[in-house]
Image 1: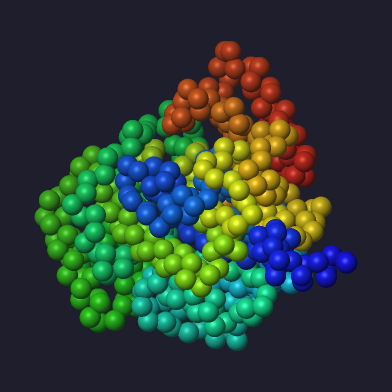
Image 2: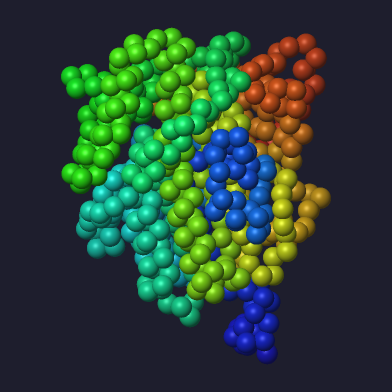
Length: 516
């Protein structure tokens, strides 16, 4: 009996084994700017995310999960290709256009007999390729009455709240749109929890009675970190976090840099919904402007507004993850489906006084990653090995029984999902961020982080600064010890490892910059 005949016979005999031979379905749910400290299975100080936690409870939670480039479009390109940004060609959002003709994981799964679908945020400029079905958002998308681009190229406005609509479309494809005789890859890409955190109306008053604790580093002075001092993403600064666009304290006659953007976004609402929205936020705005807040009082007011609106958007997201899980359960698909939840990167929730991402610092560089495992994959609980978003593509190919091309740079996580702990698993990760000059003014940089808690970063081009952190002693990354007496040996080791990774991943530009 040949392999093809065996695969046809196995589903009627040993379903779990058949799945292990390449019949697992894959549902990949990715959000935008959702950070681990705002997911209760990682950190229960701020919010409760019971449905996201269900995934971890029924499977695994990766506690050392990172990205290769902490920015939306580049992160998505890394996921699709299994390659670092310099290899897949999409290094930044400002000037990037993803080359859809290149090899991608969805194309390879199609060749392996999978149906592939993408619903939601794309953010790679070019038209999606490698998908049997897609329905995606133009650009960043809108929370209210959003537009979608169909496979015919038409742009269609859908009524309702974006997170709900994306889930509706995903479930509809699962129920009515796919060939149920084939395994599938479904990418569900949400806009949530992206700026400017516009909530579903039913949750508009949620969290209003909660006061969030300030992060210990909220009033960071950036001493010894020139790149950190030069950024433009401070909550306290109205030129960075816009008082109208971000905190929604609209005032007639006041035009900030982003007021017109804000009015266009909420202008998409139906009149009844807009009235309810305005009734709530206008009352807050009137009180705010009457108080004439300044200094720390203003910064902390903006922080609370930011946290509350972010949490409201997340609450709808968690609901919809629950809807997706419930559908898979009721349709009898859970036992044969790998369900993955992650974000395109982490996010600063007031740490260092910031919002946004980009830096190689932990809150931005790390990302939540939980997986509900189908029958036949035995791992449960926390997985501590270092993983990165370039690993998703080879993992999905491996689970499908498809060949992993030699030029893919990530590692398959399948051994970890089988409960194994390979002794030769990687002990370091490589990172490279490119987008400067651009929004938020975060300098270009690359670096290496290690399993034993060290991190070395090089900011380059218009700045030439190195930073060194021992996360075991300085988890908040406040004390740059690069060049300090006693660090010579570890610095030499980390620079050697940095060069090794740059050579492994063929980052020739970075190799030339090390001599600075």
